[in-house]
Amino acid sequence: MDLNWRRSQAYFVLCAAVLAASFALLSNNDRVADVLVVLAFIASLVITGLAAVAGHTQHQYYRAARHRKLALERRLGLGEFALETTPGMGSSHLRRFGRVTTLQNLAFGMLAIVSASGALVASGLFGGLVDNPVQTGKTVETSCATTARRVASPASPGIQCRTVIRP
Image (cartoon, rainbow, N blue to C red; front, side, top):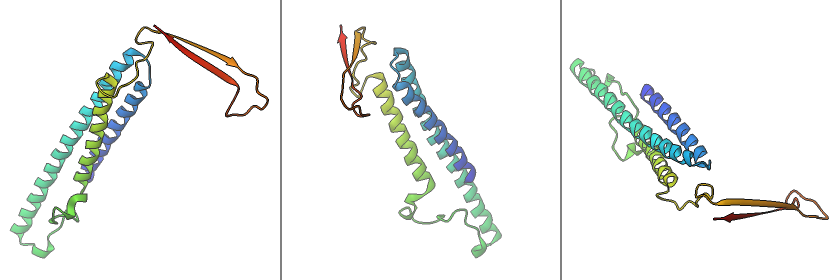
């Protein structure tokens, strides 16, 4: 079980790193970055899917080993001296809702939702992002002026800026 959890941790870290890079690219204003960020979010989604499949496969290996152990214990007649592989082994499904694989799949599911949502927003298919004027060929003019103030404070430094977007 510990080896399976360590593999899952590696998938969590990889997925989180790709998502962090995706959000960093999403804050960039270049058109090329939009394509890269969609691909990065899709990569995160694929990693999450692979992690869920790997977790299921790992759990199947664990179950096969557990059943083999039980069969050997029965053949050897160990009875009350048989070993339990995990504390929840043989408990009801209601009590086992908090088991590692269920919580792991829930976490991977949430990462998949974030990845898919990010890909949709970054591609412009969902989310209603405001068009970047540079991407649409518009001219952006910004002018700033310093205004005289009797009392200077960090909240009002005395600088006023105006941005105009022209077609």
